Amino acid sequence: MASSKHSGELRRLALSVLQPGFVGTEPPDWLLRDIADGLASVVLFSRNIVSVEQVARLTARLRAENPELIVAIDEEAGDVTRIESATGSSRPGNFALGTVDDTELTGAVAADLGRQLHAAGVSLDYAPSADVNSNPDNPIIGVRSFGADPALVARHTAAWIRGLQSSGVAACAKHFPGHGDVAVDSHHDLPAYPAGREEIAAQALPPFRAAVEAGVRAVMSGHLLVPAYDPDLPATLSRRVLGDLLRGELGFDGLVVSDAIEMGAVTARHGIDGATVKAVAAGVDAVCVGGESAEEATVALLVEALVAAVAAGELPEERLADAADRVREFARWSARLRADGGTRSAGGAAGDGIGHIAARRAVRVTGAARDALPLTAAPHVVELTPVTNMAVGDETPWGVAGPLRERLPDTTSVRVGGRDLERGTVALERCALEPAAGRPLVIVARDAARHAWMGRAVTGLTAARPDAIVVEMGLPGTAGAAVAQIFTHGASAASGVAAAEVLTGSADR
Image 1: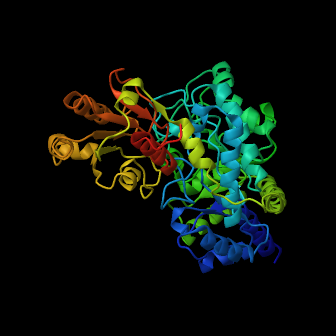
Image 2: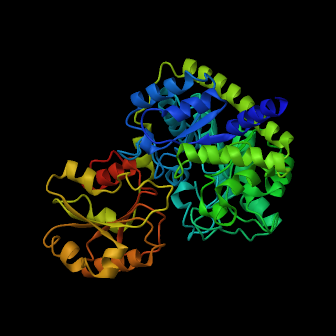
């Protein structure tokens, strides 16, 4: 009997350290049962969201099982949005805010986002990205970072955290100890950050130190190998990184959350169940799962793995209990933060236009483009579409053609991907140059400097049409000074509108 009781207690502990996702806009029965049995957190994705009002009903139903339930979301604004995945974010992302470099503006944008999330019932946001994008070929961070300068990233990370938490939603700085200097996407394989400890301290850690000083109570680990601290295990599975560095050197005593545990960087070597056990043993308190593996069976598998690991001596029961205690402590604190935020933000509503103001301020225009603007006729728009990483939802609209068509109804457009050009199913002559004969040509790129096919397409099109205007919605490249370019520093809906305003001369600049 004692054994059965102990097994039940272990199951509750195991449930409490998971942060699972689920499918649907209504809570499934299995999720409600697990919350009643001890599950302390859930995470929302775009598949759970129709509107803020619908999400508010959803979260209220979930909290009927546990008033202090942690409801998390992966909402960065900019290119990575869940709450506005159907329309594109009405706020620019980190790189645009870092380009403006006004910390008051950054704080205001984060507070505006916080009010929207608060109204939806969200209590934890897996943001901001505190990564320093020191490698321009990084396939996973890019415009999700405030920039390449550690001091700039640090001050905007702090401002973003303060702004979001002023609205009653807890922030989560990610991806510790810094995902900005890698060349592999951790969704698929294990990236490495080969710098020495002194370089890491100077380059990657300042934003996380600033986050701790700004009052962040959650930090998300990154699935990357940092040999200077641990040559064998990625940060999420490393006691040296999470214990010695994050808790010891940085003095962080809040909630350590894993990046999605089903990502290839950790599951390819350890399986989803093995990675979960190793993560908790290493110092992770809350395991994020369910971006892809969102079934009841996955939660059951991970609970069983944690309980079995305790029984086998692979995971000390004290460590599991400590993780569960940290989750409960965070849940109580975030519930108080939500209550305080509701009082403070009662007079304000999300969507006060600060996102569009910020997006306009982030736009930069070359001299050649200024000379060619505003457009005197409706253009043909060619949008060069890359394959995005899994953090960026394929369903999220982006680009300039839509907002341009609202201003110039005769605007035409085409989207072209790298595979289309490689297979020869699309020719730029037919889809881009011929429809633009006798009218303006606008070329929209997204990280042309990082995608060779896109760079070649931009070069070819501007050679054929030297009067074309290029709108770069990713990281700025090194196109010649003679090319007319507009830089938005991100591909949010707000950034697309800001570019369209510049192209048509309707921007208040």
